Amino acid sequence: MRVRRILPLLLIAALVLSLVPLSTAFAQETVTIRIRCKSTPPTEDWRCNNFAEVEEEVEAALGIDLNLVLIQDNAAWGDYKQEFQLSAEAGQAVDIILSGHEDIGAWSAAGFIIPLDDLIPNYPEFEDIVPSLWESMKGPDGKIYGIPQDAEARPMYFSKLLLRDLGWSDEEIEALPERIASGEFTMADLFDVAEQAVDEGVVEEGYGFWHRPVNGGDFLYFYYGMGGEVLGENGELVFDQDAALKVFQMLEEARNRGIMNGSHLGIEWPDWHTTVAPGERVLFAAGGTWFWGDWAVNYVADRGGEEYLWENIGFALIPAMETGRPITLTHPLAYMVSSSSQHPDVAMALIAAVTTPEANNRHAIGSAHLGILNTQLESPEYQASEFLAKAHSMLDFTTFLPNHPSWGAWSEAYWTGIEAVESGELTAEAALAVVVDRLQNEVPGITIR
Image (cartoon, rainbow, N blue to C red; front, side, top):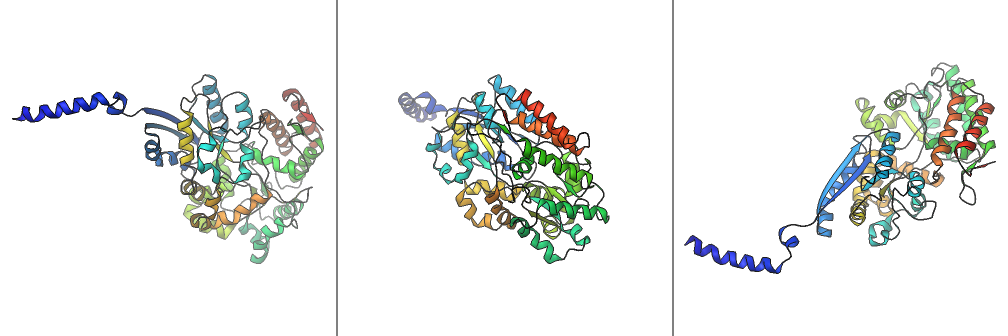
């Protein structure tokens, strides 16, 4: 009896299978997508983890079986980028790489990443991206090579604790961000207050003002603030000697006045944050908005986390310099599709699926990065974040790095001058000569003004 019952079913199944393609009958196509992200755990882990949240959604939409390989750690930026470049040269790069928008210039010219202009219209999610961010996603050829993953600003943090020790009232402290935004309180004023803190023993010599300990895009706002330009009319890199000299002289002055002494140069980031975050040793410190989230979770959690920061740390724009206008810098990170990818359409579908208010809010709110979507900025979750609500207006004063293939060489030469002056190795004038010589030798076609 058992055989007679089964045989008709087998015959029916055989008939059905004969009418259906084998690939459909037995399995969907399996597509492997590898994604590489750099993040500071745990606050930035949604950069890659968001893709796991939308995996089933994309599988259903495309009718495929996805094999997602997420590679995420906090490698040094130099090592991280070199890893991608070497794998791209071998044609074995990951499908999606997350990196700073300034890499678009060099990587597009080298053919490591593909233009996305023909793919973007297929995904309505990208229509919601804040329009101004698209300019930072373009290569020298005018094509779009990246999809914004996050944005931020670079504020000037200040210690309310130490300002109180200097005799500032709570009203004066709370008014400082607006005084900076209006241009009333300038970088010269900041140096005066920092020198006073050193002279009165409120901070140690060299702890009046700190910036990041290693090279990075932040230093460009000093150059912009002195009236410098980076790109010429024809898209060539420019180095303005007058603006750079003023930057070097400003930093040389800070050293001579005891505001800085090079003690912050080259130290490890955890040591830098440990020194700055509690607000007990450094008066003014230039950093990124994401520091706020990092500090709350990793550096002052035992003191009360974000509540402690609101009580003891303030933030504002970078004060005005020669231009008379306060300034900041925005450095959007972007998802880019590598030319090694065999499935760029699937890669783009995944990027579109995480370019939503829900997904980006998970990252932005948790890591103190600024939103990239118009509807995200209007969402109750985003508006409920007091820090993001206050920091978002900094985008009205922002600048960007240039997406030029030789930007890295320009930046390294400029940093050489900054480091030499702050360490006391060279005078401002001697540092300028070294930087100009290096640029002339390493950056073909640069215009030295």
